[in-house]
Each structure stands twice: as C-alpha cells, then as structure tokens.
Amino acid sequence: MVSLDVTISGQALLWVVAGLSLSTLLIIALMRRYFHSRSGRIIPLDKKTTASERNKYGFADVFRLRGTFLQYGLVLSLGLAVLGFAWTEYDGQVGYNTLDLEDLPELLVSPPTTTPPPPPPPPPPPPVLEPVPDEEVLDEEEPEFIDMSISDEDSFTAPEPVVEEAPPPPPPMPAPKEEENVTEIFKFVEEMPLFPGCNDLPTKEERKKCSDRELMSFLGKNIKYPVIARENGIEGTAYISFVVERDGSITDPQIVRAPGGGLGEEALRVVELMNKEGLTWTPGQQRKVPVRVMFNLPVKFKLQ
Image (cartoon, rainbow, N blue to C red; front, side):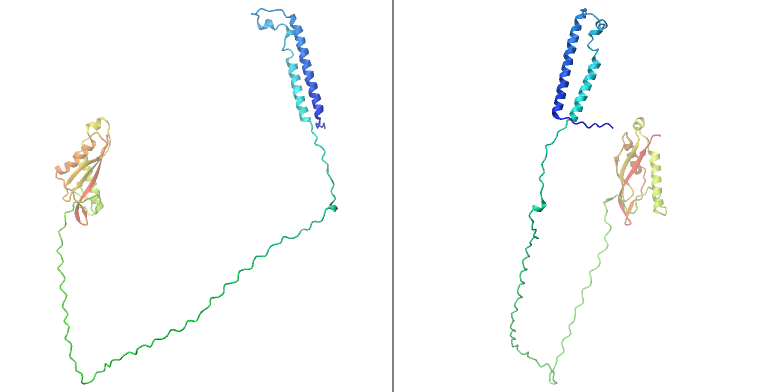
C-alpha cells in the first residue's frame, strides 16, 4: 500500500514554487516568440474576409494548443495544492525538567478548625409572685326581720273585686271591592285567546288546534295576493300584531314586519276584516279574569 504521508519543509516549498513560476514564465515567453515569428507568413486579408478564409492558416491558429495549456495549468494548480497541504510546520522543542519527588518538602495538612457556636442565652428568671393581702371584710349590718304573724285580734277587709272591661268588638270586614278594570296588555296568560267557534271543545290542546285551524281558514278565504308582489315574484312572511280585548274584539292592528310589495298591507286588511264581519274572539284569561292579550300573527305568502 502506497503511503501518501509527504512532509515538505517551508524552504523546500518556497524553492518548488519559485521553480514552477519561472518555468511558467519561460514557457509563456517562448510561445509568444513562436507565434510572433509565424505571423509574418500570413497574407493580409480584406476586411470582408469570412472566418473560414481567416482560419485556413493552421500554423498561426492561437487556439491550436489551447488543450495543452489548459492541462498544464490544471496540473500546475493541483501540484501547488498538494504542496500546500504537504507543508509541515515543526514546533520548537520543549524541554522538560525532571523533578525528584523525594526532594519535595512534606506538606502538613491540618483539618479545618470550626469555631464552636456561642452558648445559648440563659433562660429568663421566673416572675416573682408577690403575696396579695386578704381584703378586709366589712362588717355588714344585720338584716331587720319584720314579724308577719297574724293574731286573733287582727281584722281584715276584703278587697274590692276588679272588673275587667271587655275588649271592643273587631271592626267589620271591608266589603270585597269590585274587580278593577285591568288595562295592562299581557303577552302570555294562562288561557290564550281563541278564534270563534272553538270554545266548546273539552281540552285546552284541542281548543288551541281548532283556533289555529279556523284562523288559517279565515285568512286563506279572504287574502288576495297583491298584484305588485305577484308581478315581481315577492314572497315571504308578514307579521301582524293586534290586541284581543276583554270583550273579544280586535284593536290596535299593526304591521310588525313585512317583505314588501303590499304583502303586509293585505294581511293587515284581513285582520281588520274580523271586526267588520262581527267575529268575536274568546278573550284570554289570567286567574279566571278576562284580560287584554297581545297576539302576533304570521301570514306566509307563497307564489304557486
């Protein structure tokens, strides 16, 4: 196996680089002289001469040795790189002094001294209890006793009986006031208003379903789709609010929201038609008392 471990000193590397540089300069000078001597054999050409006519003199072609020069430069650069890597630097010699361990003085290592902690302070002396002299007991006066015995000679008079007055009778209970007129408008009550014709059913759910069915039937018979909404393809739901009074009449009908095209106005017209035709609702009740109830009615318009 070939060893590639090459060592070159700095002086040798300097001589090698100098020799290569001089040889390269010499080659360049010789080639310039060679091509200069060949240029005299070239016949002057017209300015309009083509490249093929100009290159017919092969002996004067400067690119003929291009490959040789390229290889030479490559070999030269690789050689310089190898020489640079092979350049070896030597460290100066380091002298070592031998030391005899027997000549060293003995080192006395003493353990670290720790100072003892200070003694705790003495406990405080106990408090001295001074004797308290007994309080002098004051001489109390002897109680005087009264003789409460009764002899036969003593006479008594019976005390007059105390007659307690009877308490006054309670005031009469006030007569029950008549039910005040309730003007408050409710949104939810125990018994919601019902459309006419459903008050005779037995259960609350049946009355509610009947009321919704009859109301939708009334709206379907009387509502006419507005012409403007039909021509413009307007659909949607109009919301009408009104108050069912305690007597079953309809008051304060309003358009809450409508999609436009006259749909809200048509739904409002049909709601107002209930009073004109004499339809009387069953009023809503709160604690068995008829009250005013706000009713919200959605009317859906859809083109067929």
